[in-house]
Image (cartoon, rainbow, N blue to C red):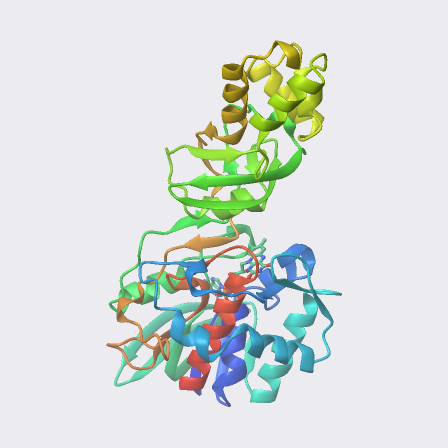
Length: 389
Ligand code: FDA
């Protein structure tokens, strides 16, 4: 069988590419449904883009690579398509756009656009063999027990990263890219909860509060969540993409609040009040109880010295914690690193030395912040490759 373009992976990027690559496109996926990560994303409502996409909110060895595709297919383009399709959406927080009803609306939109472009989709299909000669890729595909030989001028690698192997994530795109002469940068789980194997936060499991998580000059002020295994919540997921194994990070439990000034004032006006009672006005009760066990918070405000007030304010404003690790690919939203961008055209996503080979989406070494940034990269890079094909 002959096609113009074979796309490996019917995820966000692969479907977007198929919708723009024109007729003669075959998309394959080993899953039983397309866009499974879209379906579960954003708590089932898919945070499909962000109003405030900024280039410096992406990580990768080349901090400029994503700019071309993302400035030619922007969040406004995707929002326009979503609105045109009549999908209701809303902004939740920090520019994050979600479907009002269901993430399935986004999958249906992409399926519709793929059909309109004349693309075929083969599910439960895997790649058994792949070769390249005379400008043609020959793929042996296995589809429900039957083998098919497919020849294509263009091959698009869109099988995503390693996160959530239970959902079918594999390193297929990395393996193929490597085989065709592309380097793979170091890959790590990102947007991932941080683990404390000593179980120290078990008593706090379920407690949430605003916090500022900081590491090596980067900081995120968003919600913090204590879990059975350690720390989670947006502030932690965000900083996890920057944090390096073995290092400490800093938590400010009272961002924007001058605790020292508050305690000094309360010592003067309400000296008989318990320190813990005052702290519980600003922090969840269970967290205050936990902190009281960690650092002596017994006694009354009136008994606090200036030095002790400074000590408490510093402890809560710069709580140094050294995670044992991250929860890994099992729960990571994305994979940091991937196919090195140095030999890919940032305009077309095509290999610079193997015409016809394209690489898009999470498989490539471009990783966004939490909040719709990663889907936007999938849309922009998928669109750029689709246009070029
Ligand atoms: P994606 O992973 O979507 O697709 C890859 C496809 O390739 C899959 O369909 C897979 O089955 C297939 N595949 C893999 N290996 C294969 C093989 N060997 N053979 C055949 N097929 C194979 N981002 C965001 O912007 N907003 C959000 O709300 C969220 N929420 C979110 C929640 C959760 C729980 C996760 C895990 C991730 C998110 N993300 C997110 C991240 C987002 O899902 C991710 O960045 C995009 O799905 C990446 O799109 P891709 O198309 O590159 O890969």
